[in-house]
Image (cartoon, rainbow, N blue to C red; front, top):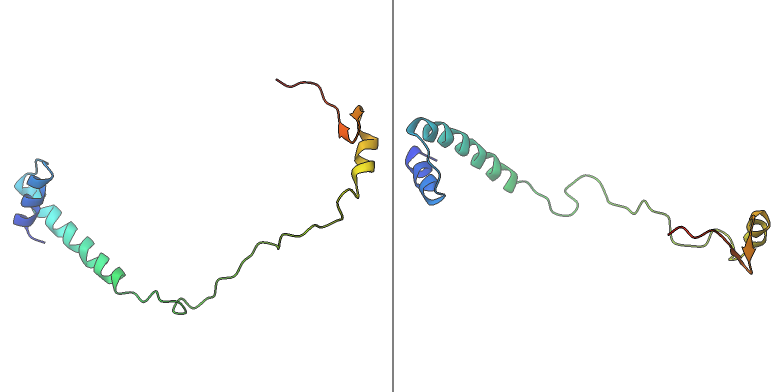
Length: 91
């Protein structure tokens, strides 16, 4: 990227850029664009990464039968109504 292209780009973006800034930006933008072209050339097809992806979460299954601990929990509650723990209104 050269100084003229930077000045044209600055004009399109309606940014006031001095000649000195345009020269610096031309160098910086040139190196950025070169880096982006390197990144674009990297092979990211499946299998080229060197590692495989796997699910690390446990499967959704019940760890215990439903209701197994209900009686034990309700016995420890200070107040209950049927199979529910009764609490004071919060709102």
